[in-house]
Image 1 (cartoon, rainbow, N blue to C red):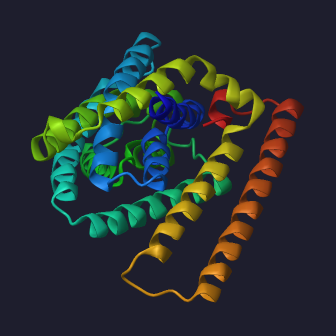
Image 2: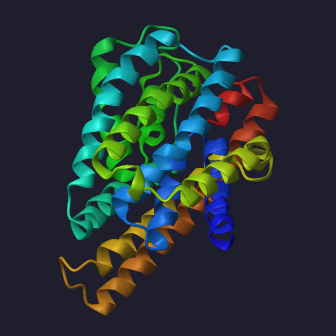
Length: 304
């Protein structure tokens, strides 16, 4: 029962982040599972299985609110599913120590991406309303799906910012389409993991805990946006993922890192993290003040 509660708390933390940012459930939960010593392939597999429930509910909700562009869903979901299946198969067949390093590198990159994206954030609305090309969507889906399976997350952190930066879709349509297509990608990754690992390898207590925690807190996740601005939360989460996986890489046996170098690295990253959070907070206050002073972008656009 104690373990179930612990994994439910992991699910709660991950869902709070995902519900507030529209991304990073997998990245957050996988990072937390690795911190407590879970096997990398199993961690990613169990996160994917738990997400079958959360992504299905999310997709249905977004569809009911008209937030889904089904053309975009078709063009990213199929290559995403293929990439996820290949990534799951690859991760399972890697030695555990190698898998930890591979996953830590990918999570480090995703953490850096989140930190930079939410700290320096920008949205070009000049091309809003024009159609996103298939040549852009197909490779995006394939890469995001592959990373999602091998890193235990990455579909949202890669897909959502890429489509936002493309500038051709409303933010609500971006989040709705990426969230809806994630169910297909998660299903493909789960099939890949279960085919390679088998049902007996899966620790269903962890899956249940992640799922229960995520489902319970889902209705309250939006409340966090009112307390902590999404931009600032993105910087907070990105920095946490960055520091956590830096520790994993430094402690790996591949390269001997002297302790003074490790300390300097941690201090430097912590300073960058603190600067990023402070910058995000100041930028958020400036956005709010500008929006109050004159008509501007909708609040929904500013919060993405």
